[in-house]
Length: 282
Image 1 (cartoon, rainbow, N blue to C red):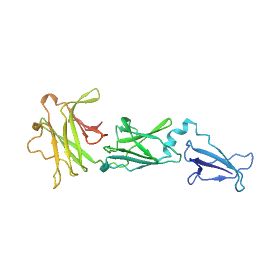
Image 2 (image 1 turned 90 degrees about the vertical axis):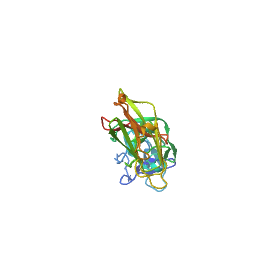
Image 3 (image 1 turned 90 degrees about the horizontal axis):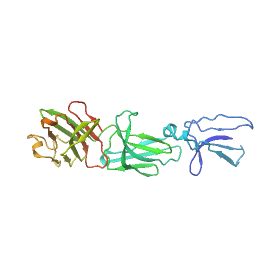
Image 4 (image 1 turned 30 degrees about the horizontal axis):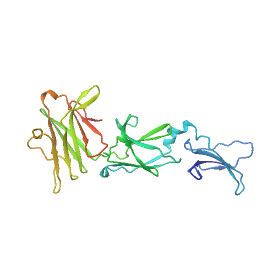
């Protein structure tokens, strides 16, 4: 009797349906056995058909670099439990092989899965029984986990496309006005930046707005809601709503853009807004 199985810590587990098959092979004959993914723990197990026959096992793919690539990650199911209300990235892995990859954060340039994902330093997630968590994160569909194992890696982003906060910008004469809305209590920072060689270099001063409750910033503030604004007083025009961050641009910096990010977390995306182009994220 011959079958394929996945070698776990103590046993060789049968393949899931419809690939769990045990075939009686006459001596000197060959047999073809189907499998779903070519993974390192895929083994061949053989035994005689009588009861309690000893089993012999061969795992030919364990040391093959090719089995640590695309098919390995395709065999993994990623369960996303990331929540903006907890400022936490959390994913649980279900895999055919007993994998324990390490996970770090990266920022994907665009929503496209083929877009580059830039590594974020010092962002290793903690792992316990294939559950990966990282706290103090501004959860966003493009702020992702990069899982690395063997000679390959895989990027998995939060499955929910909703974001906890948004920012819009309007131009009034020589004034740029930012309006922040957030569904969670948060603090935000903004600064002018100058575009140089594909980068936008931040410039002082730094402006900060803090929302204590979960109502929208710059909108109607209900009972118990509170927002504070930290910036030079001249830069908050008369009539601005509480929590609305407005920047007045001098004539010499009309070519400036604005960087906006959450400042009450450790890992946050930075949104780049430019008055002469569509806004984008860094």
